[in-house]
Image 1 (cartoon, rainbow, N blue to C red):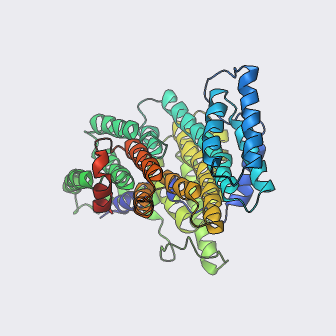
Image 2 (cartoon, rainbow, N blue to C red; image 1 turned 135 degrees about the horizontal axis):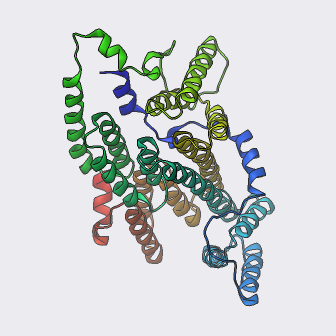
Image 3 (cartoon, rainbow, N blue to C red; image 1 turned 180 degrees about the vertical axis):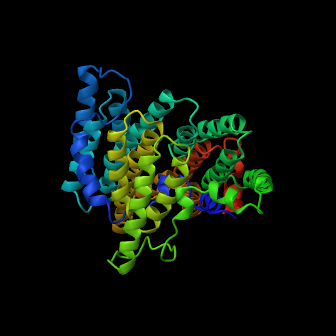
Length: 424
């Protein structure tokens, strides 16, 4: 199997798999500066509201401050978020819950709210900017494969956009049906996306089509002609690591002799992407680059590289799409991880806090393969809260919402529990 196919199957474009544990501090500092000059959300709603509406928000703020640990806090929290969204006051909400958490560092409610809003909403805004970059790339060249594939993948990582993502993939399957190499990339990523959203029954069908495409590619290769094989190799296939690829995402980073080799490999790939920024080989070099970035925790380097690449080539569809995936996609992921850490710390303060636990289960869906983790958490919560009917109803509603966002709309409410457990 060629390295191109090997890399495609293992670690294709998914920005959300990149380790960011050692990059988040400088990146967050930079994002915080950018946030001061950019509105939190990019929606087109005009900021309109009566004095009464703003007064209602101020009253809710007072009530949440005085009753931060009261049982009524989740209801006030929900009303406040609705009011802020109606008035397009997302930045106001972000600042309020940040301050509330600072003033109440031992309050599970305040810390959970900070994770959901201060980091979660901020992340969504950054991710929307990433999608805009990819859309800009497609506007420049509507036929370019790399940006269109990036868009299909990127959409699968946004809340409630799973079905839109699948529609994009289906369009790619139609437009690329005569290009077996591109078709292979589409099938490989489609399998991963279905898996991340819990559609394991569909994966087997897509995998058969993937294998058929692979066999078709191998038949076209003339194995007796060494020169022809060399000619189809891209830079990404020539570069091989000087050390084994391992997942050390949870290992403290130390400087070793292999860092010199890693830096050299990344530099070669960066120069190759810049040289072939408008070449169809760009996507293959990008894949190899992201593989190394992911495995060796060089997220900050990747963010900076693609940001600079876009500045140098502002009209390059490939550069814009890659920047959307990494510069914005990875920044959004850093913020989401910060939000999840907040909610986890709230649960550590009070393990039985229902608001924090159901928020954690919901927030988990924002991450790769988070759907099944969320379903597992909600299933256990439902069992634990079996005697508290209003909580069970809330859990069921949350399950229905999450299932709908991930393309499981046909799941009957009464069968939620059995379906969830069968898929674990």
